Image 1 (cartoon, rainbow, N blue to C red):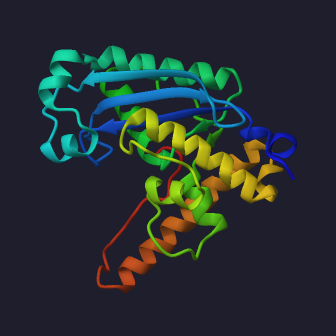
Image 2 (cartoon, rainbow, N blue to C red):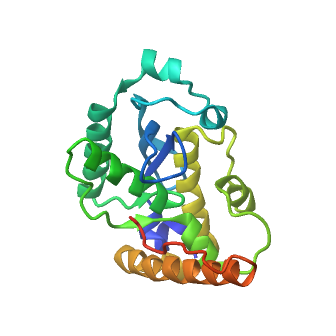
Length: 233
């Protein structure tokens, strides 16, 4: 089975990624963002990027990951409220064009965007659906594979180049290409309607979170909890 004839949902994909000030979805702020479109062979058809002044100090630990300092964000970055509105608009436009939105660990990026929308009084991204999350799908189809499930590791597993990890554009495009690679490797997924695949990911993410919570509690953290809500927590 070839990608063109079967993975219709993977033929053209919107791709999305954020780099932020931290890991807490309720408090972190957007620093850089990318919304783009890739074609059937993973080629970049459209791209739009943002450098944002988050309005708060960017911790050194975060700057070391994505390369943007507080000073640069203040000097070159767009006002956060305007940038957030534009990111939501770009993703809304992609959804109106019936393009699935790919985001690796989507519950992080889409939750951060939702919190930022609330922070600045914007309407949240409608839905959002359909969303394709290569992290959730990969864990479902290859549950027992050993090793890390970071984007870098997963891209390497599927033979997808990621030369500039933690750049929002590079990560977004790589996530889309990983989704396409998964579709090629698992034709049974390629044949699923995208709305059904979205619904399956809701269940898969909940099950994965429950399994991880049980493992943590069995290994010395009896009070550990985690959310399996997807694609927005």
